[in-house]
Image 1 (tube, rainbow, N blue to C red):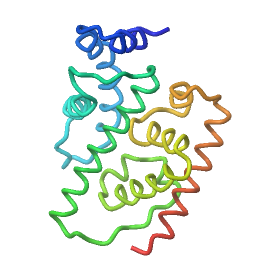
Image 2 (spheres, helix red, strand yellow):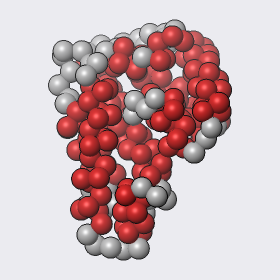
Image 3 (cartoon, rainbow, N blue to C red):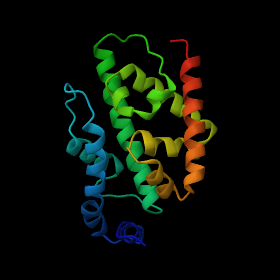
Image 4 (cartoon, rainbow, N blue to C red):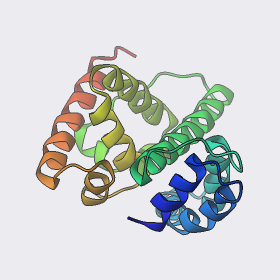
Length: 188
């Protein structure tokens, strides 16, 4: 059992100091994920990895952490928080600019979230399609969030969700095709 899981269990039992101890344990991993993602951002990007981690931490509850089931549950929530932060920023930038038409995304681009981050319209199209996938298959949507928004490798996402790598590969192939079809069908 990892230190993170033990700390999450302490939080669940009501240990008042556990949340203070959790951040140092997960900070390095969250910072690494954010740095990898933000390192591929365009030069115009003003959000720094540290700011992304801190904002995600606050959205997760900050010092008042909810009861996390396990490490995978925590990092899935962190991926979702980072996703929402990036989507909110993309919406604000798009609203300030044109409010314009969304652009279609080809399936190969679904592997490269950094490329989409430079195009707010594409990022928002993927976000909306991912919400549709979540309504149909929440587990696959969670897997995509870990891969796409938290920057997990296929193996890391499989491990975080407790699924075999073969299943993860099939989920990734299916999810990419599903998202591509959903985005391509969008008449915007």
